[in-house]
Length: 295
Image 1: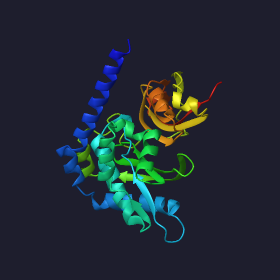
Image 2: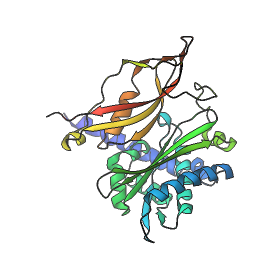
Image 3: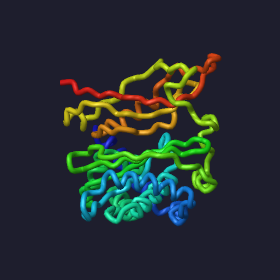
Image 4: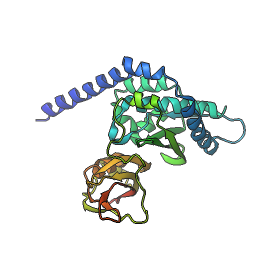
């Protein structure tokens, strides 16, 4: 009775690995990777990278090996751009300090293809830990970004594998959305976001949104085995229609719970925030998704 399920899972894994190989070997990605960032973008990336390097570099002249994984974008879109942006940040991190031994991103992509990992799975805590062990790296760096009309808010996190997958340092800053970025993204930027940006809570005159239908997240078997308790911190935009968009991961918990939190929040429905005239408006808010192990 299990054979049809096994066949289906085998086909799904094969399709995922073929899709990944196709993406990493595609002419479109090769073209993007051949495009250096504009000077203004390079300067902004250098500032964020230098700030992060100062927080993670070891004392003395000892080098530290780091891996920069593909960045996360809103709603899992813009995969090629996410790879390109991670490439640019890896280069900026290399320039930031002679102590930063940044793994060649092409080697990382090859490892992902060989391990038959689909693009979206490359962000799971378990996969990150495996990559760290494979390349003998103790620091894993990932980034997440949102898309506004004129800016791309970027947040970069460094995780240490010395004591599990714990957060070691964070750096963030806005990137100006250049003509080059718009061309690379090749799709409209956040058409439901006002050009002036989305206000963050608390903002005078704007009410707080409230949850109408917010089902709890699933608790993974991996987390259950580890008896893991804690919370995942996200930052989301709640649209005037009361739906979540542009989800950014701010604090990891691991063991598959980060992905579970994002999957749950994507289904939530809110009573939207309103302006002084009682009109529904988009707002940017932090969301804490709690997980508690129950015997």
